[in-house]
Length: 231
Image 1 (cartoon, one colour):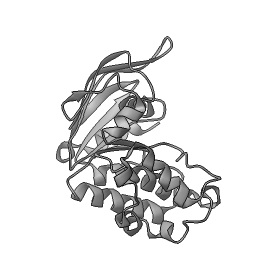
Image 2 (cartoon, one colour; image 1 turned 180 degrees about the vertical axis):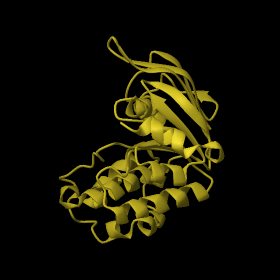
Image 3 (cartoon, one colour; image 1 turned 135 degrees about the vertical axis):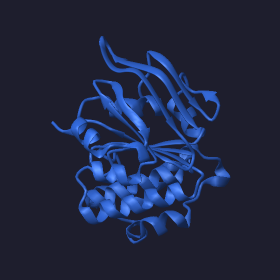
Image 4 (cartoon, helix red, strand yellow; image 1 turned 90 degrees about the horizontal axis):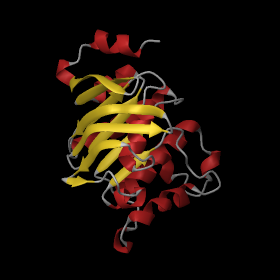
Protein backbone atom coordinates (compact mmCIF):
# COMPACT_ATOMS: atom_id res chain seq x y z
CA UNK A 1 0.00 0.00 0.00
CA UNK A 2 0.90 3.67 -0.23
CA UNK A 3 1.18 5.39 3.13
CA UNK A 4 1.94 9.12 3.35
CA UNK A 5 2.63 10.52 6.80
CA UNK A 6 2.89 14.18 7.86
CA UNK A 7 4.08 15.30 4.42
CA UNK A 8 5.29 18.88 3.93
CA UNK A 9 6.21 20.45 0.59
CA UNK A 10 7.56 23.91 -0.19
CA UNK A 11 8.12 25.95 -3.33
CA UNK A 12 10.79 28.27 -2.01
CA UNK A 13 9.32 30.07 0.99
CA UNK A 14 5.74 29.10 0.09
CA UNK A 15 4.37 25.96 1.75
CA UNK A 16 2.07 23.97 -0.55
CA UNK A 17 1.44 20.89 1.64
CA UNK A 18 1.11 20.82 5.41
CA UNK A 19 1.32 17.56 7.37
CA UNK A 20 -0.57 15.57 4.72
CA UNK A 21 -1.39 11.98 5.69
CA UNK A 22 -3.01 9.64 3.17
CA UNK A 23 -3.31 5.93 2.40
CA UNK A 24 -4.05 4.06 -0.81
CA UNK A 25 -4.59 0.29 -0.85
CA UNK A 26 -4.06 -2.19 -3.65
CA UNK A 27 -7.44 -2.87 -5.27
CA UNK A 28 -8.93 0.48 -4.25
CA UNK A 29 -9.40 3.99 -5.63
CA UNK A 30 -8.46 6.84 -3.32
CA UNK A 31 -9.83 10.15 -4.56
CA UNK A 32 -8.33 13.51 -3.63
CA UNK A 33 -10.74 16.41 -3.97
CA UNK A 34 -10.42 20.16 -3.56
CA UNK A 35 -10.66 23.53 -5.22
CA UNK A 36 -7.99 24.87 -7.56
CA UNK A 37 -4.71 25.74 -5.89
CA UNK A 38 -5.15 23.71 -2.68
CA UNK A 39 -2.20 21.35 -3.29
CA UNK A 40 -3.70 18.39 -5.15
CA UNK A 41 -1.18 18.40 -8.02
CA UNK A 42 1.66 19.10 -5.57
CA UNK A 43 0.67 15.95 -3.69
CA UNK A 44 0.87 13.84 -6.84
CA UNK A 45 4.18 15.42 -7.82
CA UNK A 46 5.50 14.48 -4.38
CA UNK A 47 4.32 10.88 -4.75
CA UNK A 48 6.08 10.34 -8.08
CA UNK A 49 9.18 12.37 -7.13
CA UNK A 50 8.75 15.34 -9.44
CA UNK A 51 8.93 17.74 -6.50
CA UNK A 52 11.14 17.22 -3.43
CA UNK A 53 9.41 17.20 -0.07
CA UNK A 54 10.53 19.11 3.00
CA UNK A 55 9.16 16.84 5.72
CA UNK A 56 7.29 13.63 6.43
CA UNK A 57 7.52 10.29 4.64
CA UNK A 58 6.14 8.51 1.58
CA UNK A 59 6.10 4.74 2.05
CA UNK A 60 5.33 2.35 -0.81
CA UNK A 61 5.05 -1.40 -0.29
CA UNK A 62 7.00 -1.17 2.96
CA UNK A 63 9.81 1.01 1.57
CA UNK A 64 10.45 4.68 2.31
CA UNK A 65 10.67 6.25 -1.15
CA UNK A 66 10.74 9.89 -0.01
CA UNK A 67 14.26 10.49 -1.34
CA UNK A 68 14.15 8.31 -4.46
CA UNK A 69 14.43 9.86 -7.93
CA UNK A 70 11.40 9.70 -10.24
CA UNK A 71 12.95 6.98 -12.43
CA UNK A 72 13.62 4.85 -9.34
CA UNK A 73 9.97 5.18 -8.28
CA UNK A 74 8.87 4.29 -11.82
CA UNK A 75 10.90 1.09 -11.57
CA UNK A 76 9.00 0.30 -8.37
CA UNK A 77 5.75 0.43 -10.32
CA UNK A 78 4.62 4.03 -9.76
CA UNK A 79 3.12 5.80 -12.80
CA UNK A 80 1.45 9.17 -13.31
CA UNK A 81 -1.11 10.49 -15.78
CA UNK A 82 -0.31 14.22 -15.53
CA UNK A 83 -2.73 17.10 -15.74
CA UNK A 84 -2.74 18.37 -19.31
CA UNK A 85 -1.79 14.88 -20.58
CA UNK A 86 1.74 15.85 -21.72
CA UNK A 87 1.82 13.46 -24.65
CA UNK A 88 4.51 13.98 -27.31
CA UNK A 89 2.69 15.76 -30.16
CA UNK A 90 5.18 14.92 -32.92
CA UNK A 91 5.45 11.22 -32.01
CA UNK A 92 2.92 8.70 -33.24
CA UNK A 93 0.49 7.01 -30.89
CA UNK A 94 2.63 3.87 -31.02
CA UNK A 95 5.79 5.84 -30.27
CA UNK A 96 4.10 7.63 -27.37
CA UNK A 97 3.12 4.28 -25.90
CA UNK A 98 6.63 2.95 -26.35
CA UNK A 99 8.07 5.77 -24.22
CA UNK A 100 6.64 3.78 -21.32
CA UNK A 101 9.25 1.08 -21.98
CA UNK A 102 12.02 3.10 -20.37
CA UNK A 103 11.45 1.75 -16.85
CA UNK A 104 10.84 -1.86 -17.93
CA UNK A 105 13.12 -4.83 -18.38
CA UNK A 106 13.75 -5.61 -22.04
CA UNK A 107 11.66 -8.79 -21.79
CA UNK A 108 8.64 -6.74 -20.61
CA UNK A 109 8.76 -4.17 -23.41
CA UNK A 110 5.51 -4.82 -25.22
CA UNK A 111 2.04 -3.29 -25.25
CA UNK A 112 -0.56 -5.54 -23.64
CA UNK A 113 -3.71 -6.26 -25.67
CA UNK A 114 -5.66 -5.25 -22.57
CA UNK A 115 -4.72 -1.62 -23.20
CA UNK A 116 -6.40 -1.67 -26.61
CA UNK A 117 -9.40 -3.43 -25.10
CA UNK A 118 -9.75 -0.53 -22.66
CA UNK A 119 -9.14 2.14 -25.34
CA UNK A 120 -9.87 0.54 -28.75
CA UNK A 121 -9.66 3.88 -30.59
CA UNK A 122 -5.90 3.93 -29.99
CA UNK A 123 -5.43 0.69 -31.91
CA UNK A 124 -6.88 2.34 -34.99
CA UNK A 125 -4.61 5.38 -34.67
CA UNK A 126 -1.20 3.84 -33.96
CA UNK A 127 0.49 5.71 -36.81
CA UNK A 128 -1.17 9.09 -36.25
CA UNK A 129 0.78 11.80 -34.47
CA UNK A 130 -0.25 12.47 -30.89
CA UNK A 131 -0.82 16.13 -31.64
CA UNK A 132 -3.46 15.25 -34.24
CA UNK A 133 -5.69 13.50 -31.70
CA UNK A 134 -8.64 15.15 -29.97
CA UNK A 135 -8.33 16.10 -26.32
CA UNK A 136 -10.26 13.04 -25.22
CA UNK A 137 -8.15 10.74 -27.38
CA UNK A 138 -4.98 12.31 -25.99
CA UNK A 139 -6.24 11.63 -22.47
CA UNK A 140 -6.83 8.00 -23.32
CA UNK A 141 -3.32 7.87 -24.79
CA UNK A 142 -1.83 9.39 -21.62
CA UNK A 143 -3.55 6.75 -19.46
CA UNK A 144 -2.51 3.97 -21.84
CA UNK A 145 1.11 5.19 -21.79
CA UNK A 146 1.10 4.94 -17.99
CA UNK A 147 -0.38 1.43 -18.16
CA UNK A 148 2.40 0.31 -20.52
CA UNK A 149 4.77 0.63 -17.53
CA UNK A 150 2.78 -2.10 -15.72
CA UNK A 151 2.16 0.05 -12.64
CA UNK A 152 1.25 -1.14 -9.17
CA UNK A 153 0.39 2.44 -8.19
CA UNK A 154 -1.37 4.65 -10.75
CA UNK A 155 -1.91 8.34 -9.99
CA UNK A 156 -4.18 10.42 -12.22
CA UNK A 157 -4.37 14.20 -12.15
CA UNK A 158 -7.83 15.42 -13.22
CA UNK A 159 -8.34 13.00 -16.13
CA UNK A 160 -11.79 14.46 -16.91
CA UNK A 161 -10.56 18.04 -17.40
CA UNK A 162 -11.77 19.40 -20.74
CA UNK A 163 -13.02 15.99 -21.90
CA UNK A 164 -16.33 15.25 -23.62
CA UNK A 165 -18.89 13.27 -21.58
CA UNK A 166 -18.70 10.09 -23.69
CA UNK A 167 -14.95 9.76 -23.10
CA UNK A 168 -15.35 10.61 -19.40
CA UNK A 169 -17.56 7.52 -19.19
CA UNK A 170 -14.93 5.45 -21.00
CA UNK A 171 -12.25 6.64 -18.59
CA UNK A 172 -14.48 5.88 -15.61
CA UNK A 173 -15.12 2.35 -16.89
CA UNK A 174 -11.37 1.85 -17.42
CA UNK A 175 -10.55 2.96 -13.86
CA UNK A 176 -13.28 0.71 -12.50
CA UNK A 177 -11.89 -2.23 -14.45
CA UNK A 178 -8.33 -1.59 -13.25
CA UNK A 179 -9.57 -1.52 -9.65
CA UNK A 180 -11.46 -4.79 -10.14
CA UNK A 181 -8.21 -6.58 -11.05
CA UNK A 182 -7.03 -6.10 -7.44
CA UNK A 183 -3.37 -5.68 -8.42
CA UNK A 184 -3.07 -1.90 -8.43
CA UNK A 185 -3.61 1.04 -6.08
CA UNK A 186 -5.15 4.11 -7.74
CA UNK A 187 -4.95 7.71 -6.54
CA UNK A 188 -7.33 9.97 -8.43
CA UNK A 189 -7.25 13.77 -8.17
CA UNK A 190 -10.52 15.30 -9.37
CA UNK A 191 -12.77 18.34 -9.22
CA UNK A 192 -15.68 16.59 -10.96
CA UNK A 193 -17.44 15.45 -7.80
CA UNK A 194 -19.82 12.84 -9.19
CA UNK A 195 -17.06 11.11 -11.16
CA UNK A 196 -14.78 10.98 -8.12
CA UNK A 197 -17.52 9.94 -5.70
CA UNK A 198 -18.76 7.08 -7.87
CA UNK A 199 -15.25 5.60 -8.19
CA UNK A 200 -14.00 6.22 -4.65
CA UNK A 201 -13.33 3.55 -2.06
CA UNK A 202 -11.81 6.20 0.18
CA UNK A 203 -11.48 9.96 -0.16
CA UNK A 204 -9.65 13.01 1.12
CA UNK A 205 -10.51 16.69 0.70
CA UNK A 206 -7.74 19.29 0.69
CA UNK A 207 -7.90 22.94 1.67
CA UNK A 208 -4.85 25.21 1.79
CA UNK A 209 -2.50 22.26 1.60
CA UNK A 210 -4.13 20.32 4.43
CA UNK A 211 -6.50 17.36 4.65
CA UNK A 212 -9.75 18.71 6.11
CA UNK A 213 -11.97 15.68 5.46
CA UNK A 214 -11.13 12.03 4.87
CA UNK A 215 -12.64 8.58 5.21
CA UNK A 216 -14.29 5.66 3.47
CA UNK A 217 -16.77 6.27 0.65
CA UNK A 218 -19.55 4.77 2.76
CA UNK A 219 -19.01 7.50 5.35
CA UNK A 220 -18.93 10.40 2.87
CA UNK A 221 -21.59 13.06 3.36
CA UNK A 222 -22.05 14.43 -0.15
CA UNK A 223 -23.31 17.83 0.92
CA UNK A 224 -20.34 18.43 3.21
CA UNK A 225 -17.84 17.53 0.50
CA UNK A 226 -19.64 19.65 -2.11
CA UNK A 227 -19.50 22.62 0.25
CA UNK A 228 -15.72 22.25 0.44
CA UNK A 229 -15.50 22.23 -3.36
CA UNK A 230 -17.73 25.21 -4.10
CA UNK A 231 -16.06 28.50 -4.98
